[in-house]
Amino acid sequence: LEEAVAGEGSFLANSPLSPLRYRGVNWVNMLRLRYDALTYQWQSWVVGFDGEEQYRLLQNLFGSIRTPVFAGVVLASGALVLLPVAWLLLRRRRPPALPPEQALYLDFCEQMHKRGVTRRPGEAPGSFGRRIALEAPALQEWAHQVTAVFDQLEYSQGSGEPAAHRQQLAHLRQLLRRGPQAQ
Image 1 (cartoon, rainbow, N blue to C red):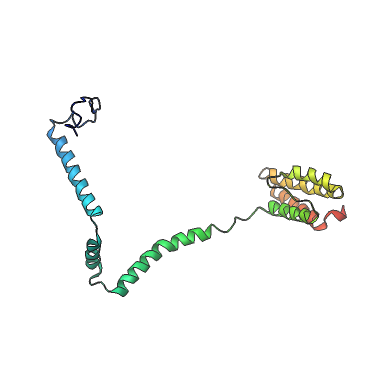
Image 2 (cartoon, rainbow, N blue to C red):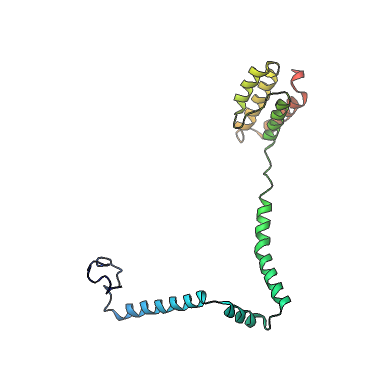
């Protein structure tokens, strides 16, 4: 490489790690040559690992290789890799449990859908409540109460007493059970 770019004269000339700067230092040259030898051994072993080398390695590990033993080793190796992966993939499929106030609000949205007013994707509870007032005025008061209790539960988490939170959840459940006709 040095000879190929000798005419240019600038190849790695200013680099503090240039091998050209340490050409006269024997121990640096020895380290470089040993590194090159190690790299060569690694490349020849990994890249040159053909079918015959694989067969010899398996014979050294398992003795004489019979088809049932080889099939068992291959299947066991595959299972060791695939079972943890399958477990991770299947474990993630279960959706996380919703907080109770969100589950109750989704029930409210489903009830509204059955009454002809469907919540749009990404629509905030307050916006949905205002749209209910426009599209179904008879449901306005009930929707307002449900939305107000939900907003209080959803946006004041951690700032209130657990007993007050449970009481608000019970109130939201009661509103949903009674429905708009009791308003």
